[in-house]
Image 1 (tube, helix red, strand yellow):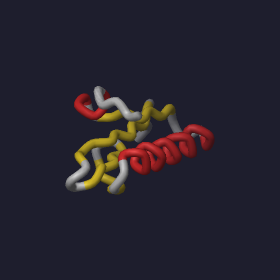
Image 2: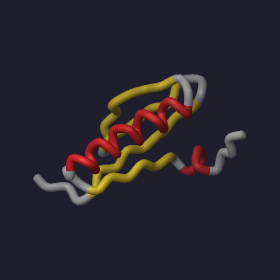
Image 3: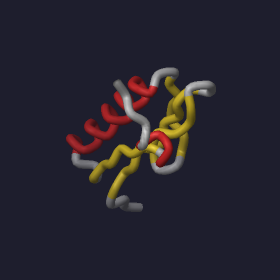
Image 4: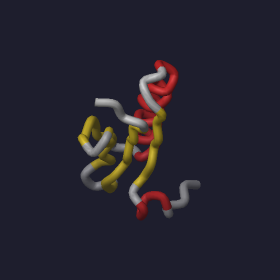
Length: 69
């Protein structure tokens, strides 16, 4: 089964942690949003370098509108 794009998605909130999904399967949870983004980005970059597939890191809509200072 070939996949054109592998998507990593960050979802959740600060109370229950930030959940990281790969192709709709939860693969991790982090307490900090920054750690969640870093983890998902690391995995996506690794797969992209290995040439497995195109990768994408995204956040749920409410998270994407947040502003971090």
